[in-house]
Length: 366
Image (cartoon, rainbow, N blue to C red; front, side, top):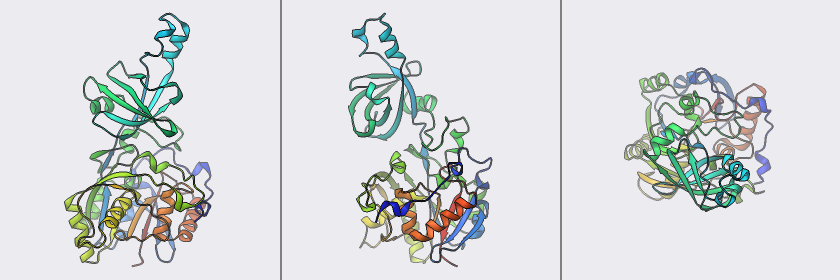
């Protein structure tokens, strides 16, 4: 399929730049998976819109304050001379580091800006020297491998010095409120550098109402990476090299999925991260007795129109970027024309898009 088949017009003012005052005050576009019919609702109505026997699966990953600001230690400036103005200018250049993926106990794949000014062997200092990093290697698209040294533990120092890595379409610096609102209320573990944004709408009160209806809630952990924002650079959708993400399915969740399948109960995935993990696990377990097995793995599945869904039968999701792999995923789930018509309605009706935006519930007819 041509990637242009997943394009739509989105005015910039539709892209949410801040979260709403209340998490569950967001709008909810209810979409029928089979017919494409929609209704305009509110997210706080969610518990009443479900059958009551669903298994809801959420991603409990926690977002790291993964953006760091530092400066060179200056080993490459020494030949300039201690009092040389060029050396002082060299050291004053701010360096921004964005953690992308942990590849060792103290080693991360990162994006460094300006990357061309940070060669292999360079040292970067953060804060008042509480955290340092040495550039161990280089990669494509500005990627650098950094090995960190912290005086009082890397995670503890990162929590103090790091900034929340807001997505590139949010055109502002992070604020103190983002520390809370760019996390879900069920965020507990893992090392994500982007939020599982469909979960941002939930409140403890909504979770309680769901359980009061008898709806079961299970958790997985998927470390959402920057690949979630990666554009499709190929002309044919099928040629796109999909990003990989680490996930873990607990034994309790694997058993809950098996029980729901036996009882012909719907599995509602909260977000595309959950879809990728469950469908990747199901694809790897085709032909086995259980639908999925517990444990850690790496999601490499690429879901686009024509691909089957083996586990997920309902989907709660935010609105996605044009010509993106996530838009292709929801189009695979509900039909490309259904999704594009629903998106056009959302644009025309003033829905808020992307991470801090509104939500869509895709379900089967009752």
